[in-house]
Length: 345
Image (cartoon, rainbow, N blue to C red):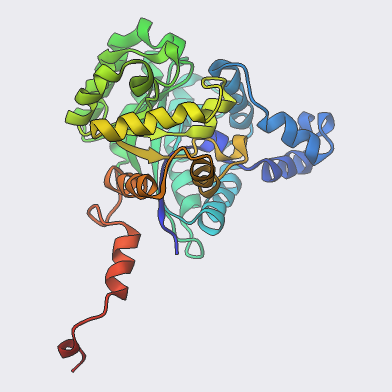
């Protein structure tokens, strides 16, 4: 039975290496010539990078092949894997729709095409065979101009049957210099009924408290408990959840090892701050959600009590989970609870 809600997963980093490699081979992509053997490609694709900025270059590589023509292939494979191999029943898939539009066309034309991209992702994510509840999160991007980010936000508000929130992504070294823009955009999103999250306090470069009050959830946020624990009471008071993606911090060089993540869980629990365990880029890492959880348990980063807290928190903080805060485990438990004898007659 599918039991997990995945709140932080990128379309650009969700395609597992073998699926992506087979696509490159089949289409004659230059990378297929560079890495004709799968093992070589996997080593290149999943190796740790020196920084978040270098790590995000892989997103650009994947984005370049995720077009209007190929999105159904990638999204359908993603949903199938999430259902069959990960036990995910609710998925928030985030991406920057502008980066999937036709790059040879003018920006105005590409902005119009974003609606087609969003609807195609929704269509490809719907499967009767692999019935996952999937909603989209649009990522405004630190490298894109204000006008394009604003257009993504407005489109998200118009398509709230398939888009549940907006996000801020991209190299976080550019956040602070444009903070007035981000505050305006997130304020606008909330006024339109959109939920909000943002890649904030992931690295030491992305630590700016001015945006925190405008977020419903915090993407990553690990530097709050690690470097700025004085902010934890405010995070708890606002009811914000941290979307923790442990393997990411090893792949980006943000943390030296998983042991550092233990402090994140312990300090958040002590402060009453909810944490959801997420994968971020399951394909780039070749680590899917059950493996992410198993790594935390076997490395003694969390115990099973903390795991259950995180699983439940993911459903409580899901932006579009329809069961009013009730998890699949709770629903299953109700089904298995013996009824009093009088109900049998």
